[in-house]
Image (cartoon, rainbow, N blue to C red):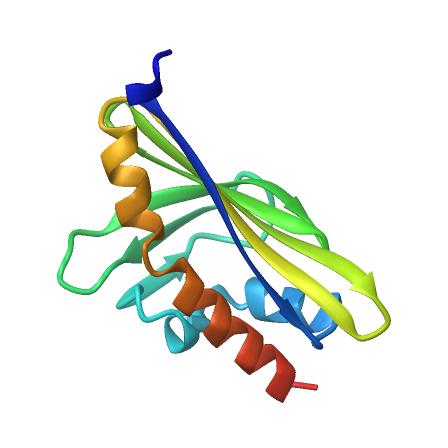
Length: 141
């Protein structure tokens, strides 16, 4: 693949929330729209485990089908969204840093046609999403 067909980036924030608190927020998929302004509607087709599909509708856009491809409790989950030949993987990692410090990382890997254009568009709001997630997690303790 050439550089036009792949795009990768990472976004991170540190928080005082525990990995378990962050994980409990991740597992509550129907509530994602309460802290992620990029979601107007969301529904999951089963348990929060690898292989489960969910449908997410961004505000003013068509619904997107995604699949949980790797789910590890209190550690990470990865979802994959495919649009034609374009694949977007987003890893949501929880990294303990020590007593009362946790880093939340969203790592995006887009591959396929227009990945270099679509990747930045998909992840443009990730800094705000992470800030909102951290604020919610810190208030949940």
